[in-house]
Amino acid sequence: MSQNMKGESHYTTALDAYPVLKDWVSQYRAVNAVQPKYYIRTFGCQQNEADSEIMAGILEDAGFLPTDSYATGDLILINTCSVRANAEDRFFGHLGSLKQFAGEKGRRIIGTCGCMMTQDIHRSRIEQSFRFVDFIMRPDQISSLLSLIEDGLIHKSIYYTEDRSTKFHENLPISRQRKYRALVSIMYGCNNYCSYCIVPYTRGRERSRKTKDILQEIMHVAAEGIPEVLLLGQNVNAWGKDFADQKQQNFAWLLSKVSEIKSIRRIRFMTSHPKDLSDQLIETIGRIEQIEPHVHLPLQSGSNRILTKMNRQYSREQYLEIVNKLREARPGLSISTDIIVGFPGEELADFIDTIDVMDRVRFDSAFTFIYSPRIGTPASEWYNPIDREVIQERFEHLVELQNEHSLTANMKLIGHNVEVLCEGRSSGDKTILSGRTADNRLVNFIPQDKNRTDASSNIIPATDREGEFIPVHITAAKTFTLLGEEICP
Image (cartoon, rainbow, N blue to C red; front, side, top):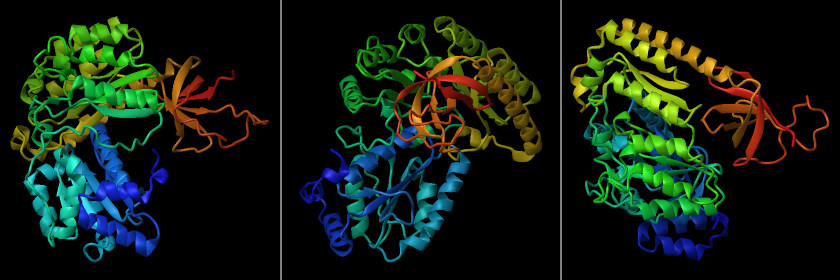
């Protein structure tokens, strides 16, 4: 049911257990003659985006309407990420800018949530320097969002509770932000404890959602007409390992089950850990057409010495073998990756090993990072920033090489016809459309408007085609995108 079809009685029911919040909403309506608005700012990964969609669903179910800025939000949530230092810095910058909107406590509700809120150091900084915040919420507390807002309104100081939830976010409303893709979390947490990564400490250990709950959510997605699902987990390949019958219910088996749901035409997933990418999973990726012909497979380093220090639990030789098996099972499959430059102790020989793997694999795209120490991880104790200039030079060399590989891979598609799942109008040019191929390449293309008399004129597409599969002829290639024209029927 859409938001504007819900009556006041529905909201009243949703808020019955929260009298203070209910009174706050009622008073707002009485004064302003409209529903209060919420704004969620999300940092970080798709898992955070999925969490934000659940929080948005809860708020809309309680009578809040979405808005698009801090200035117009009556309830503001910032969903944080702790994987990279720049995300943390940006969060505190954004939080500082909210002081101008805070005003008297209770006039506007402000909350912080996400991975950073699991760490004492960040909570303490908020409590000391940003006292206009009403409440702090960890990722495992999302199902208690309305309760935490209620407590934030009651308490004069910032409200935070150590109470932890072991519940999954089941049977909660979800406000999906896309018509073309649904984000579906299949598991939470991580058991790998890579020496540079904070995720196991912020998200906890691996916990797999039950098969019936995942499939039920995806069936709802299909009923809504969304053609693509993105299955999410810190390590999706480990799904089912915490089940008693883990030999049967593993990730390959789950992919097969999802592929049986009618109307789901594309199945994407991330992120895959190389150590858990089994031969059965590779065979499944090769066999089932709905599964995207693309795998995001983080390498992090091409040096066995550094991989050991990272606690990645695979060697460069094993990684290369997995890549060969994937390409053999699914010809034309694209591979993207993550690479860290300047990990503590990295020497020139280690960097050369990484370049060598890049030349051997020729990744279609890569997320490249200069190592960023995360407080609380083993690698942060080894960090020595004295070689920043050398690390920057290595990083620039690596980016230049990857850009060459990405452009070469994209240029191979010039002159070919591809199927693009439209994501809407291009962010850079509202007169053209944008979307992705099955193998996850971004395509900006000129639509063939039925009412167009001059094919060269810049007419804004008359219809909203988000979620539509469109045949496109590729005419040019850039490093990060393909350019094309819609094929006339």
